[in-house]
Image (cartoon, rainbow, N blue to C red; front, side, top):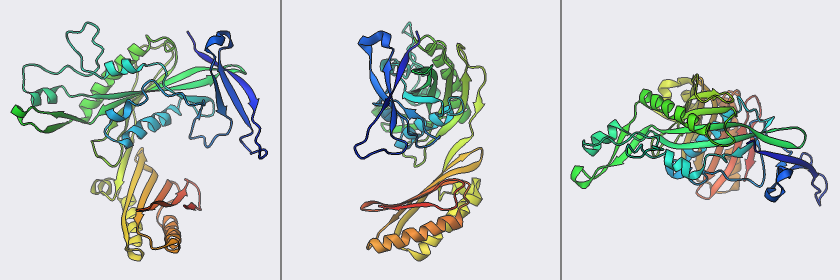
Length: 383
């Protein structure tokens, strides 16, 4: 059965007068034929950027809200799984014609059961992780049957149907995989936490098997039988990592298809600056960052650290976020330092990347410098 919402245009009045871009909003209700289940919501007509989807308000939490954080190793992985999946969805469900909603179809208990290990004694066998090998010691069993699947993220994309309705137009599913399997031994076996680094080829192969089974099961759910689906494999970073993991493969599943035909490699990655591995892989970018840092060292020695996080796609730096921590003696010093750093941004970094510099102290955020790709002049804000 198709689920759809009805759109009714309304006009919002502001006591202070008209505000450009905000004066009209859309009111959303469910199918008027089901009046007892009618829910009202608003789709703001103003849009921040084509990089972001408009969402239906009040925001309707997904079925797995609150489950993702405990299952991924860090906050950076939680954010990248969600935003990276949105970025991937833009290729098939563009933000100028689709609305975003958190996943409403795969239920909490279903996800929980899928994340478990296969129990050979259960007839239904809902778990998607391999069964723990029996008859061997704990360490050997864990390394031969690690937990591959960490989480499953669902996102829904709604499309307009006629003048006053929207319906589900597509679904994206993120399969979050563990790059490292963590486990504990008993006191008799050593009694301390262990870890097994899962080889990349093994992780990708097992992830694709899991994704195939997820698609098969999803197609049996009401409302998802005949919608296009994007599915991606996300390799999360090890625990305590500063930068997030990344998607390693993706596939498009056409309407009604019950299996994945072709996988495409996703060449995305995050790298830390300064870092020896980053220098080895991307020397030019590492040198730019090092020169930027050295110029700060020369003129403001009381800073406590300069750290960068670069996002690469197809081997090219797309976005660089830099955090600078300082100890300031007054507002004038902060203003002077911010002006100096703004000049360094223009001097050291090409304008084909998106760049953001956050300046902070023990008191909190102090200033923000942002330069979008293609812009000559940065935007500067002092808090």
